[in-house]
Image (cartoon, rainbow, N blue to C red; front, side):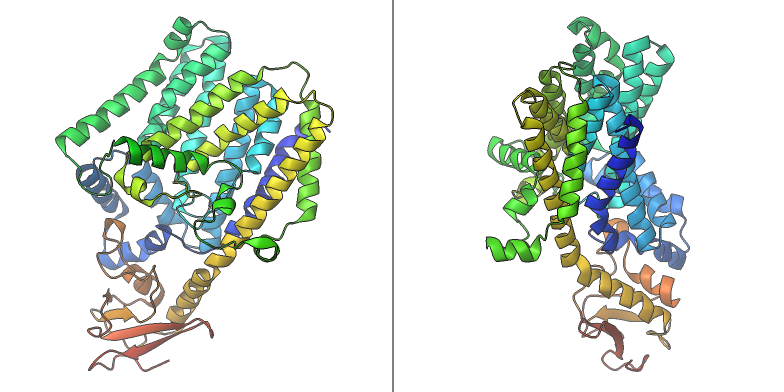
Length: 493
């Protein structure tokens, strides 16, 4: 198969694996930020103003410094107001990440290994009914991965040609990633290992990686200083007790490995036994065979003796660890994580696991029949991952249906006759219809009412005190409105 075909095949197979995400609605934190445009319009507030508010809130309230995330997040939700367009953004950013990963591995280890590594990564892209980069979270994990991979690609040019301008580009791209998310603070050491793997002495590897190491040290020092100056007592407090730290680190690291979410089933959505397996994770034989065939071609294309497995093991393991450990230091995730759940950095950890699997493939490739066995295993993994992703989308479908019906109802006059200033409550417990003050950065569902019905209402939690009550009939897929106690602003509909 022509080498030029692999990027397209990787993109196509990756799309098939993660495509169930396109059928989901606003999920997790997105269910709050979905209301952003209407919330800003109703309050006559500007986008820069809420960015400034959010930055100060996270910095002084939780000692977290990530201006890049604040800017990226609010720009995304101010721009992508259609849920399908937003989901396509997440999918496209994921496919771009896969392609840059392929190119990055190719730059350091050769094109055939880059092609194989990207295929393996496709088979690992699990979607979870938890905090998930492919289902939600404004594409931030993908943007961080993209900027980091671009930095690593520039660094490969530094190692090959020693150009100062390229080194500056590598450092600036890594700095951008670090200013967007803390999970990559420790990634500076990966540059050292990559330089060493390319034949540099330890002293020379440290020297050429010095700008990235300096960024890592500066970022960690900043976080330490912030926690000293502004001690955090909430969920984002540092907790370094050995036992909860080790448990959280194990859960975060293990979540990146193949099919762990399905096997552990922390959301109890897959069931047990052969009947549950067939019902909840229906395999696509065509995907299994197609993926296995392409993987077999990729394995065969790797020249004999082209690379020792150990550098891949070292870089892969280090990538997983440096991304996982910052999560494990925070009280929130020590209390929250379970086997099978991995917080957002697990998206980057997938690529470290892909390198470990490629190293295993290379280590046993000369065993008779090994390429066929590995190809079938990768095909089965991809097919199972796609099936579990489809199951997650099925579980999340009721929220998507309710959100879509809510928009239609508001546009169709659900709140006709309700004046500005009325209080409103939902008799149906929907996680995306939170009262004022419940959402992040103060965002509430009042933005949804203004965006789709043109009325400024105040969402509250108590239906007994609300002027207007809305409720959802999931069977009929219909929202209705009724007056609250002593009010008659809207007639039942």
